[in-house]
Image (cartoon, rainbow, N blue to C red; front, side, top):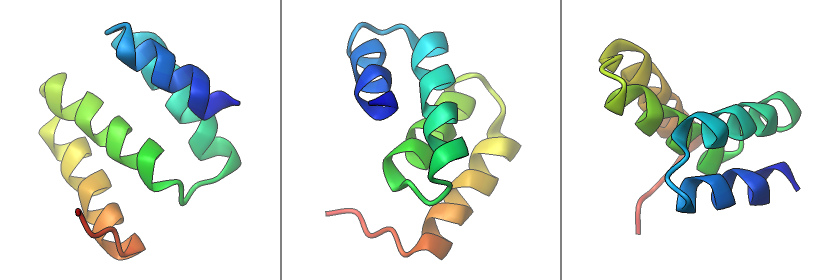
Length: 67
C-alpha cells in the first residue's frame, strides 16, 4: 500500500510526499529496490550526492540490474 501511495505522489511530482512514503516502505522492507532507487534519486536531485551514492552502492549490493 505504501509503495502505491509513493508512486502516486511521484506521478504528481510531489517529491517530498513520495520520499516520505518510500521511506515508510524501506522501514517495512529494507531491500525494496524500487524504494531505494527512488530515495537515491531524491537525494541526488536535492544536491546530496554523497547520500545518493551510498544508496546507489546499496542497489549494487542488492544485485540490482537495470533492464
